[in-house]
Structures are given as structure tokens and as C-alpha cells.
Image (cartoon, rainbow, N blue to C red; front, side, top):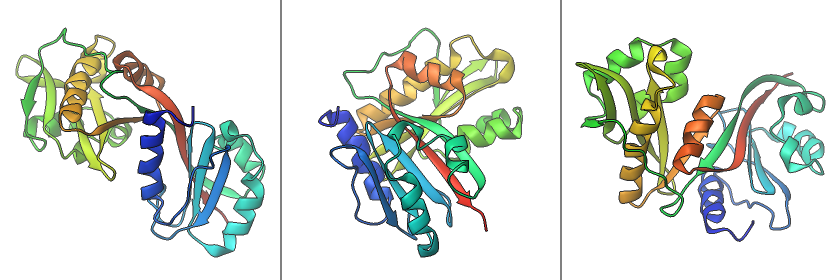
Length: 239
């Protein structure tokens, strides 16, 4: 619901990141604005964020604003982050996403404490070794190399086999980053380390945010109590 406090807080975060004054329409729909300072997407791209029944869209170049606005206005919000639908309406050259956007507050949180979790600095060498042990796409997707919090880790012997932390985002957001060694996935390790990271974010009065594309990652978030409120998609318009 639009008056939900968690939804309102999440929307405020992305409005700030748009870089220009804009709003998620109160009656649903989409607001499109030109912004060369948008953090909704890479520079030069179109950024689309849906939360609840409304969306905001930033366009970096004026020459595309009219086309994007015409293509998107009137579309159901749930299809605004569907790459195939957008390709039918716009000359889309490249796509990032879509990624789900999920959030929780203290009342939603379901802690997981069935594994021992240690705390180490976010730049600890053991994290670098874990990142080096997984495919490059996994390392890039998890964002663990960019955390600004401590790292919460699970070990097998001396080796870190799962780790989580968060990066501070605008709007007092704790953007969650989680990674498990491929051979040890499905054993609850991601949930354990992520639970510790979420608890730390909440203790610091931050809003935990879980942005994910892979379905296993979404399931971990759901198990911890995150509520999927929307999605994010970035597109690059071709010539």
C-alpha cells in the first residue's frame, strides 16, 4: 500500500538518488525526468525503479526523454522492468537487470543463528581470497568488494566460505552484499552471515536493502523477512 511506512521510506531513498525533484505518483503510474546526476543507472542510461504501484524513470539525454515518456506512460507498472516489453517499444541496445528490490524493518526481521559467524574488517585478506575463488560474475554480482561495514563470515577450518556485509547508500540505507563459496551453497551459510549483517544495519538505524537477480538470493532475503517491494532496470538506448 502507498501509505505503508516501509514503502514510503524506500521510495524516499530512490527519489533522492534520482538527482532531480520527482515523485512516485500517488495514484500509481510513472514519473519521467531528465537527470544527468541520476544514480538509478549508469551514466548515459535510462534508469527505471518501480516500488509498489508507481515508478520513477530518469533519462540522461534530452533527445530521448520524449520517446521514453511516450513509450512508458500508460503502461502497467509491473511491465516497466520487463526487458522484452521495452525492446518492443524502444531501441534498447543493452540491459542491466531487472533486479528485485526488497526491504525490511525491525518488525519483519527473522534472525538466523544456527551457524557460528565471525566479524572481520571489510578489507580483510580472507574476503579477497573468497572473491578470487568464485566466478567473476558471482564476485561482481555480490558487491562484497565494496562494503563499508565490517564483514560477517562463516569459516570451514581457517577458510572463509561465506561472507556478508553492506555498503552505506544515501538515505541511511544498508545495501546488503552476500557471497557463499559455490560448493557450499544450499546449507544455510548465506542466511547466517546475512542475518548478522542485517542485525548490524538495524542496530545502526539503517534501512536494509536487498537487491537481487538470482532466485536463490531472493529466497535468502525472503527467509530473513525482507519484503519485495519493487524492481530496478537500466537500459541503454541505441542509435
